[in-house]
View 1: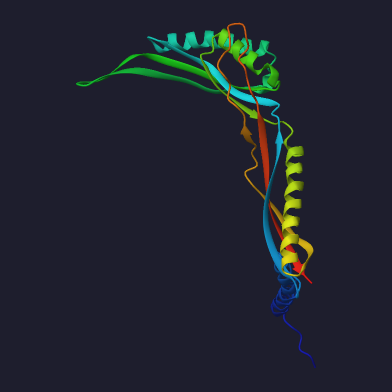
View 2 (view 1 turned 45 degrees about the horizontal axis):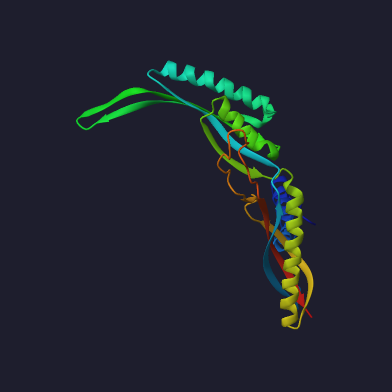
Length: 247
């Protein structure tokens, strides 16, 4: 007569059965995590890079005001007044609020160093810097001139960029795939094989456009806008593709 399991023993047996039943599924999942070739196939890994070039349609630059005064309050007040005129010039140039961001407000003492005495404070320097995005490259020189006319005594940039990067990256991706396929075909033909299929594709790279512009040139004349040469930006993509070769 079969013996009945006690409740603790039954629970333990059920847990063991469930564990054993789950093992094949987990093993199969682990086996599919890495690229696998057919029994008579050979894996070929190829790295291919391609780029797409675009004329930049936007630029970023930083601008601001640096003032000095004998005491800290005077330095900050003078800076605030001058910076208000700069911000007004930015708005007048048609720069949207979303394209203007304060990047730093600083106040530092100025020291006089003596060889035989401790440094003494001779005054204070205040600075206020904003980053702006100009979405009309044609107006960039005019905007920079307006900033200086309004009192900006610091300008850094410009740095050029492309707003619609995805279409450029897709163009580079297609070119990289075609390059990898051509190379895989060459290897296969040399070995007397054929390309059966693509096993895996992974995308790498820094994801940032590589600008190749000329920097802003010196001012040509009193009434002329500062000349700007935007040049081109190169957006590149790196692909690692694994092919299967066979007969």
